[in-house]
Image (cartoon, rainbow, N blue to C red; front, side, top):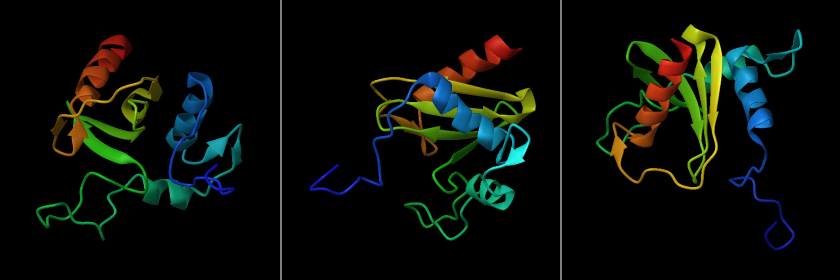
Amino acid sequence: RIGGFEKAYCCFNSNARDIARIGKLVLDNGQAFGKQVVGESYIVNATQPANYIVDEDGMENDFYGYHWWLLNYKGTTVKYARGILGQYIFILPEYDAVVVRLGHLRSEEYKDHHPKDVFIYLDTAFEMLD
């Protein structure tokens, strides 16, 4: 809270299990326990490039939806959320998996709009899932 108002832009505190549940909700297109709790159309739109956004070079966005980042890495479609301190929720539909990373630091170096540590965590996840 700041000055009596809730912050709507940051600072979601939770544990890995509950954060993974958010990922599972996205993986399952808004369904939880057989019930549609978030509209499927919202999940689809949130995890597709928001075509009204352009990058710093004026190029059409192909890497960001509604608070979800998008990446094709090693032939796998990856949707992920990221926190300012290195928290990640990776959605890996090809593996039917959600991978969570909690942390206190995120890489300051980027490759194609993605922090470089994303690739380390994905390589580790792929190794465990293969």
